[in-house]
Length: 331
Length: 295
Image 1: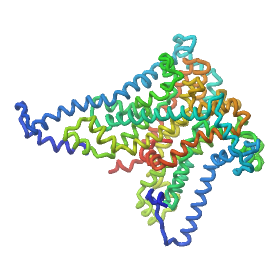
Image 2: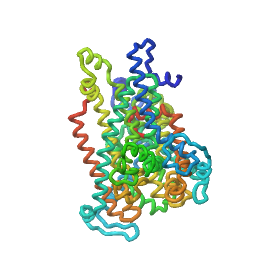
Image 3: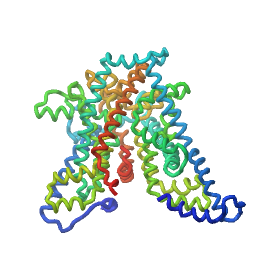
Image 4: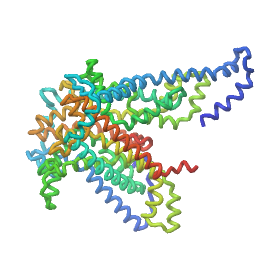
């Protein structure tokens, strides 16, 4: 598309003057000479527009990443300073019970929260895609919680709802539950955060809904003619057509779930109360770095998170090659 | 009704058969059930902040038996002698600066990456996309050391500087996506008329990017309004705290005894976000649906 105007302009400048012809001051000559001029100007403009990003990326992204990689091989302490200690931080993690706890809690959270949230959001999106009256209203109402779910305010409300004798305890007690509020019960406290994640299902739902709207209705009509049932249509039409959107949501939700901090910190504090059951990996990084000032060790933690997220992302992209169906590529 | 027609997606059938009507009722019932679950925590907190009784937490009801405004009165008192409006103001300043920064820097960056050709462009675009997935925790410690060396901790600079330097990759991406929908012939026509790249950007693209500007502004406002980690790390003086830090401090001191006051304060802190959402929800939903930016 972008190529067509420039190729259309080329014959004109080619016929306007021979190479090496004296520059003429007419409009045609100006048009001829603009072409290399634009390229140079475009390059200059490009870098000029990129100046803020280039500075930011160098000083606040790439530089700090390299620095924290270096720090992860030192025992740097904010007040005492530190020395190069090789891989000692990384080997120390294997004997660190808090590391094991943080990894365990984070993995449990990712494994529970992401699938439940995505299944819920897909289910509601499919219901909404029936295009009945009021669809816009419901879509907006379901979306709203995802804007506030990760705020301190909602985390405080969650603490109230899930405390002993709170709403969750009262409702579940009437069904015979005697575990008290999730807030004080280490075997279920992680569920508070899972429920919080599921509560914010609206964001992936809107993306699913946009994807569902793109599925050509003819496919379903053809399947109807062939006598396919609802489940068959879902498996053979909806899922394949939606697979790029599913991939996007799975990727973003998983990467996001590894990095949850605010609600975990408010609900469980630095210790991940009760009994380390909400000790998220990010909370551990924060505590090591900014309470204990062990910034070298915390950097090793952070780099391991980067590597873990990187591996998960890579696996997903690999899997997507097999599983994701791109209709557009067929054309 | 006008809102419904404006969204333009409703199909209203007047001549529905009875089974279709039953289906429609069932559909609405399911939707309302989901809605009730989704909105319950918010309705509960509204009720809790008005309840006169002392056992606010244990009361699951959504209707206060005796209504009192005293929780709001104590919320407005703020914390440690600093009134609540001061914390609101701090949040507004941080969010406002963030919005200005994001709109100015991300649109520029997206113009260069999406429209101009220069060596290194592909690499830079790759870095922008990679940072979408990069856990921010890995930059946190060195960034803190930098700002601490520059004696900029306990100021808003560390909280907003990244916005002015186009580091919110989500929005750069949003603008690039949006610019793809604007025909290149427009820039080319302007260039042939003698406009430079700066003229093209400011006079032609920026006005057409208005919906993207609005979407990114609202998201930036809401995200920085909710941001907790930044203020937690960089701010020490309560005078400078935005609302999330206030709520956290309050819950550690007053909130232990004054649940009503804390619920009222929490509710007040959520109101600007909800209002923004109500006014701009169409921009938000279109924004995430087209570019995949998350709330």
